[in-house]
Length: 127
Image (cartoon, rainbow, N blue to C red; front, side):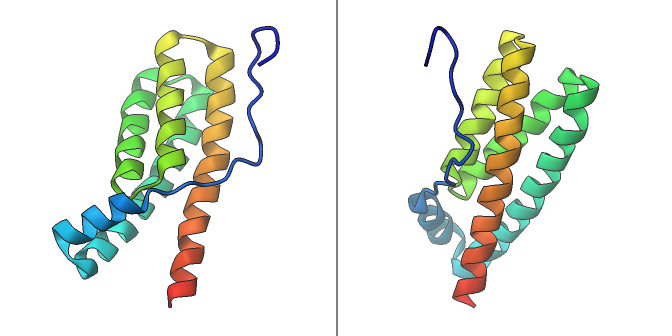
């Protein structure tokens, strides 16, 4: 942080919490958990697109529930970085700071894409 300005990294890695996936598997069984992860990834993709569509138009009332749903799905499947960034966007939305909101929305888009692709890559590796 320099003189009140926080520099946001552009190459932020997608971090996962494998414990969340283990809890999901324990609760639902491996097959159902795998299906739930696939559904959550679809919802996350849709939510990211929805946020990207709502933000430029300034529909802040619709943005909050979309972000809350995104955070919930990300937490459920262990996408720690994506959930944290979603919470940061919600914080900026609540603070009414349009500059910080724009910056964190851009970060959400980058981290969201990176996180979803990382999971798809893991799926490809596991067969």
